[in-house]
Amino acid sequence: MTDRRYAEAAFEDVMSTVEFRVAERPHITVDTDVCRSCTTKACVHACPADLFVPTSEGGILFNYEQCFECGTCYQVCDGEGAISWSYPDGGYGVVFKRG
Amino acid sequence: MTYAGPGSLSTVVDETTKTFDVIVVGAGPAGSAAALEVARAGHSVALVERGPFPGAKNVYGGVVYGRILDELVPRWWEHMPVQRWVTRRSTMVMTPTQALTVDFRTQDWGKPPYNGATAHRADLDSWLAEQAVEAGAVLVPSTVVTSLLRDRTGAVVGVRTDRPDGDLTAGVVIACDGVNSFLAKEAGMYKTGHEAEHLTLGVKQTLALPRQTIEDRFAISGRDGVDIEMLGCTGGIPGGGFLYTNLDSVSIGVVLALTGVSKAKTRPEDLIAELKRHPAIAPLIKGGEQIEYSAHLIPEGGYHAMPELIGDGMLVAGDAAAMCLAAGIWLEGVNFAIGAGMYAGRAAAAAVKSGDVSKTGLAGYRTMLERSFVLTDHRKLRDFPGLVLSDRMQQRYPGLVCDLVQGMFQVDNPLPKPGLRKLLRRATRDNGVRLRDLLRDGWTGMRGLR
Image 1: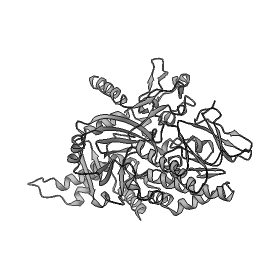
Image 2: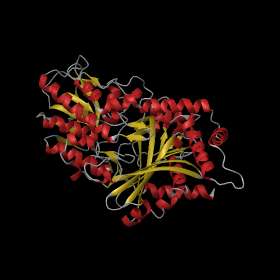
Image 3: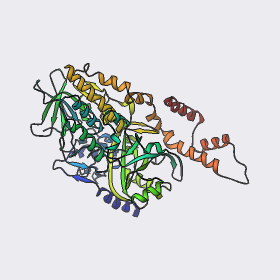
Image 4: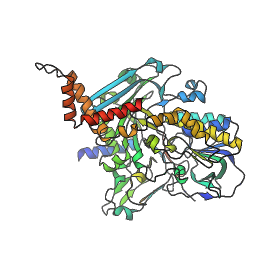
């Protein structure tokens, strides 16, 4: 478990190198009722920003603030209509400098 | 208020005065090239970008091939913001403990007209958009196009944006809105709703290193640069890896088939971490300080996965039209976007001039794409993306190739050298490859190279 903890701490450092201009409106919404019946929860492993966390009740906790806006989550989502995804409002969201 | 997303619905509007002759959505390489050509033809054009500046949302994986810019910017290499000119191109086939590298170097690629360059997309895309603005295009940044406007016949006549009173009308809308292209989907240009099997996820870390250290480690000097493409470094997930040099940083990452990512229990950053620990890679990046992490989807399906490219009042170009070429040893995208955008701009300008912006009036776009590298290369290499991401290519061939080479160079005295046939038999057996499949895949590969 030591390795995993180390990896998590390092990942936060990695994420801290990215600029996000956080919008007030969340551009991702998740219908956790749908998530409760989802057996794969692919978003949890696939999201490159690690924004989706399973809860003990079988739902999904997420944040939209450090989103790369790649679209992986809605593409891998098995649950019909579980993840609603749009672009953040104009000028907000991720700002890559060396992409 | 509407938001750009998979469920967006078009708004029907009655024909009004056009705000612009052409609206280009997305100021990436495709969009800026399109806007540049429309403006140069003397028509009014808006270039709408959702980021605060062009390139803010964009990520690439290694090399920009610039020769298509010959048609747009004279002596472009003197102006384009380049990190390094790629004079070394390596292809690395690896297992966790082995690596076979084919390394090619030519100094021809380090002088005009050059071949490939590394660049930061924020710089590159902003520069290309600037060319369009100088030609007369109106750049509208920090603005999301949320849906299409259509007339009563269904023809596209403009876009709705997230600005107050943000409807813009035009004769032609060119959708260069990237891999997720909600506009192409909204217009019904993608036949299937489920495109995940044609997508890969690219994740990339940029690591700062002193310029001299990079030059010493990668055996380069001046503005020369290196691009390394890798196969066999993505665990059980179909994909590949890359490492390329910027001026005073290196960028390393992996590209993963989305369907593989969703099945695997490995997170993308763990695969990068593993790649960074590989004995062939670790010494190259040692001590690099993290300066940015990024991720983006890549439309890798190629020719088979492309949408319809022309509608009434609408064209699609670049990633929005799945125009990335991911054909094994050829990995290109920015050049295809620039080319397609340029032809889309020319076709739109011609249609506006003739007064016919219907699908028929815009048909010149397809003709230009077919006559150029854009669709010629894609059609020729249409079976490559599938071959590269196939189970054998991913799971078996890297080990087979490495074992074969290890067998050739390993001296097992007092045993004599094994014959090639024996080595091949042993390597195919150990890696679970049937000769029949090897020959068939070889044939598919050769056919594409004709």
